[in-house]
Image 1: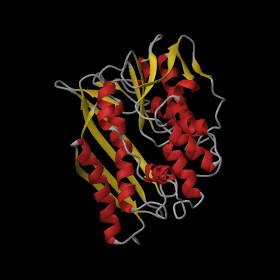
Image 2: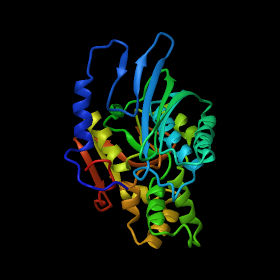
Image 3: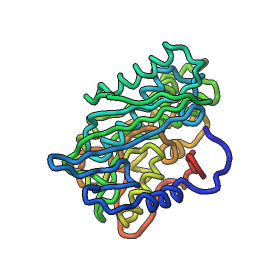
Image 4: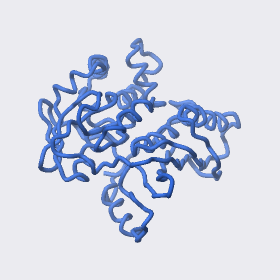
Length: 315
């Protein structure tokens, strides 16, 4: 939703920031660069992540209810904990508002956060409030894990799996931008709009796939971006097969939505973001296989054209 050219890429900024904050710490198992940080403790490992949502960048109050916004921001944090093979325990919520919001609207944001958090058995334990020209919500989630599952664990010979088909949120965003929420007669487009306003996260599947996965990542930016990150971190090549993607049970419905929106279904699947499905590598993980891990580097797409680049915070 944001516009304007940045003078640097998000990847470049993160790499440089990680160098600034790099300090020797025997308890820090995983630092900046994965879905969450992991701190080793005597009984279990702490998993810590933070996600921020900014009005008109990550959500629009004209499109989404306060409750949907709260659920969406909470889900982004919780998904990152599960992407590390963790279980969320506690969250803190910081929110800046204009002061012109109705009290009930503010409380509905909190109710939406609470709705999503309760699904996982975690608890909000604190936070902060401030004033701003636009609404900003930042959540820090803290979880536990016995053994973190990293982006860097992919091995040559692994198969590549997804827990759910991404692309629905991106389709919903396009539908909202075109004003179709008021005139849609399509159940599939209505579903896509709901998935953008408040993405559903399959936490049970996340726990299942983490038990056997060699590497794991939350598909929040896009399938292609997360696959590139995992391949780079693991020093391997990801081969993604369009025919295997097209065999997914949800593909026909999403393809119909893409046709109605006059966009490429593979652009939605590969370049869309904010779905919070999970991308994993391993063997016989029991989920839908979309490719394999090879020696080499980068991404190799077969049986599918290179998609249009998706939205990123910074170009």
